[in-house]
Image 1: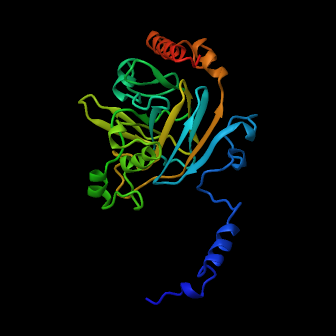
Image 2: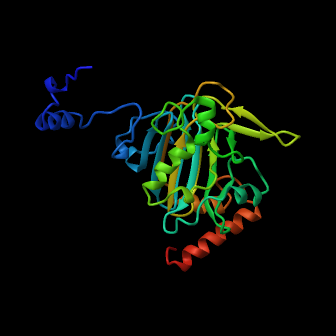
Image 3: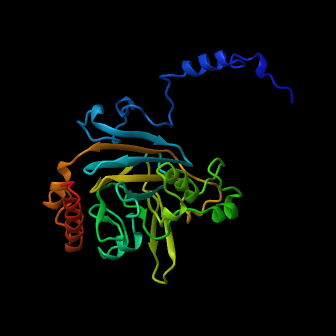
Length: 291
């Protein structure tokens, strides 16, 4: 095939620079908005009355995409399944000590509940709470089966690389981790939001799918946190074609919600295990001079 680049506007360095600079300020449906206040308004994606200037992170993650950010203690993170087929695989690492990270086994064992919903703590392996689910209009989540793998996607879809049409969640989370100096060894099992799974009486898994378009879930962060997100098909999704849709991400400072949570004003009274995990977290922060 004969190249036609030499006759284009970008054939020279000056032309390429002019073309690149002409893109400044342009927006797309699937992108990170910088500054976050520039994100377009979307009903339900942010609370009524919250000003755009209060946003700390605003992004629309493409199907098969990933995103990551470092967010401060007291940040409220809202994930929204805009079109009803998103699957947000989430990992949390403590920003000041990234070896402390989400422990899915403790997250389901300690609060005596395998199914995530409002009021559920997301725990580390140190008996501390990294985040709490404080709002949930979906109810279709999964803390049991993790995300997709290269081997699984190759077998099902014929491709698994991040740049393919069916990227595996673990490959995407690895890319996000690398941006924070982390690697494969730092990626434990993740939790998934918006694609539900239940355990049948015989111990097998039942995939429930999505609650539909517009469902959201809010996480309240108890520590400064590295958030890793992969938006890809769920590993138990029985549909033969790779199926996923955009994921809306918004975060804003809500430090007062930490007090409201402990006081029982946000999701109702907390279980004793949750209360102790928060106390463990706050004691550690106090020892570090953060509180």
